[in-house]
Amino acid sequence: MSTVRLLVVTAVQSERDAVARGLDPTAPALPHPLPGHEMLRTTGGGGPHPLHADLLAAGVGPAAAAAATGAALTAAALREQPYDLVITAGIAGGFAPVAPLGSVVVADRVVAADLGAESPEGFVAVDDLGFGRSSHPCARHLGAAVARALGAVHAPVLTVSTVTGTAERAQALRTRYEGAAAEAMEGFGVAEAAAAHGVPLLEIRTVSNPVGPRDRAAWRIPDALSTLCDAFGVLRTVLDRGAPPPYS
Ligand SMILES: O=C(O)c1cccc(C(=O)CC[C@H]2O[C@@H](n3cnc4c(=O)[nH]cnc43)[C@H](O)[C@@H]2O)c1
Image 1 (tube, helix red, strand yellow):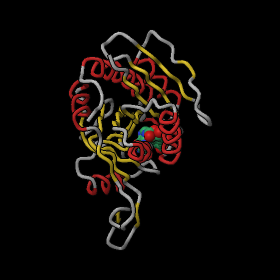
Image 2 (cartoon, protein in one colour):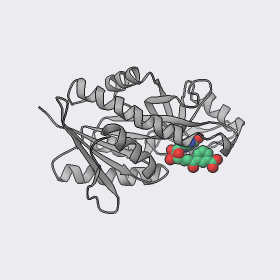
Image 3 (tube, helix red, strand yellow):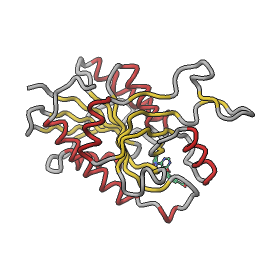
């Protein structure tokens, strides 16, 4: 029997608490120390692979997400109990018609959609400028299995530092990243930290609003949080019944 060590990074506490309820509705998630951050741990038996899940509300945006994820991964490495999987999770904007309100998206890759330079010819991604990278792949086999179990869209998820608020920008992103399903604000930051530690990555998002003209009345945040909770219940079953780590 091998323990599965999971790190789930959300932006805010309401997302983290939805994940905790989904992973184990019966056991309370308890504080687990991480300097500078508030992290909870939920441990569960039940299946063939006991689960230790650390749940981190890292703050909004890629920088906060990268800093907190890096801290958690380093602390685990120093304890000689590295994570088997990092999941960036939460609510997101969905690109119509790929990901309508209420849908679940499992990323096949995580793309930094506004990291680069503007030019008269258009946007130039940071890797095309000759620095670093602008996308990370997600764990392919596990991602496909989770998407199948969830009936989710399995497609790229964009990371942005500014929430899209116009039809023009939504269309520009659709054109630049064909097939993109959703945008959120943390995935690429989490992915950079996970890649630095060589830990496989998933991104799971539930759609709370359409990507497009800003319309606060159209957000369905409680529904998206409830869907996020259900999605982590399904994820738990996939991890319990599937092959043990290492994940690919
Ligand atoms: O003020 C607005 O117009 C607005 C519209 C949508 C979302 C926000 C947020 O502040 C939420 C940011 C938070 O939630 C994730 N999220 C949810 N929807 C989106 C989106 O359409 N684009 C980008 N991020 C979104 C994000 O990961 C943050 O954690 C404000």
